[in-house]
Image (cartoon, rainbow, N blue to C red; front, side, top):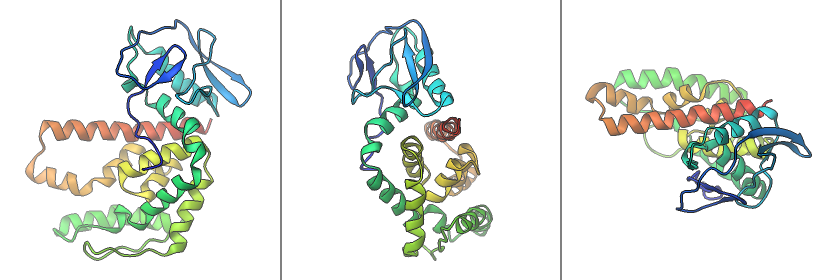
Amino acid sequence: MSHIPPLDPMVAARKGFRESEERLKRFWTAVDVAEGEGGWSVTLDGRTPKTPGHAKLTLPTQAAAQLVADEWAAQGEFIDPGTMPATRLASTAIDRVSQVREAVAEELAAYAGTDLLCYPAEAPGSLVAQQAREWGTWLVWARDLGVPLQVAEGVTHRSQDPAAVARVRELALALDDFALTGLAALVPLLGSAVLGLAVQRGEVSGELAYDLSRIDEAFQESRWGVDEENAARTAARRAEAALFDRWFRVLEG
């Protein structure tokens, strides 16, 4: 999404985080979490690290702070930002999403206008039936949530009810900055605002939602096979979806 920086690797420095190509050594021994003003902070040798925007790394729940702290504790001799996705989510929420909430919600609502679940395959029959069965369940769920979406015929774009799109925006804005950040990263991964909201609300696991988002691809793989590179990419994205699911759960406390 244009208002949210990609969750690229972010390198930590002694006085906070900064983006850099340089490898930095671990500079702390003890990692903990501490409750204070504004929530729960990660501490490194008793001091709270800062985000790239120079804000304290403070989260709303102890469980969320512990998830981030565990990433810092797991670092070896050198800091590996690629193994710190929760830290990056927290930093993005604090530095960026808090400043552009309305724009982020608008972009999430736009996904509802072209939601993956509204564009099923036209053939073969077995794939059509599977998508109708498995996606249909979540379209009904979305309708009950106040987001009634219409299924398109073929690849032709079908405009959705503006009230349904507005409802997605409303649901997004009801989230705090941290959950909104997770949703804004998960929805593009799935191509579906409906599935993203279902994960955020604990209705479906991140892994299952990812599997639902790629029914077509899985069908093709069952017929033609899959190479190692694509298999690795799929596994990585599935793990990413699982991480977002865990992120939402720790934000609940």
